[in-house]
Amino acid sequence: MSLVYPDDEASQPGKTSDKTDRFEGRFARLVPDERIVWATVFDAEDEGFSGEMTVSTILSPADGGTDVTIVCENIPTGIRLEDNEEGCRLTLDKLAAFVGG
Image (cartoon, rainbow, N blue to C red):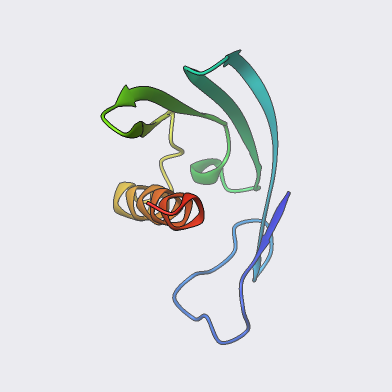
């Protein structure tokens, strides 16, 4: 997968190229109705952005719906934790808007 940043985005440099982040992923574990674990390997020469990161999406029953929690492990040292957290929060916000909640 590739994330391509707009030309006018000066604050977000790519890690694979100037405006691109490339990575490969695989499902490491699937537990129906409970958990999705995604392992991601980034394509970057800089060791601070390389390695395998694991993202677990945990589903828990809640009144009137489902709570969704994202847990990231082994975040490469070059990725600011605040940026990773913001990205997860935006993902959850978009999911909530998509499902109408």
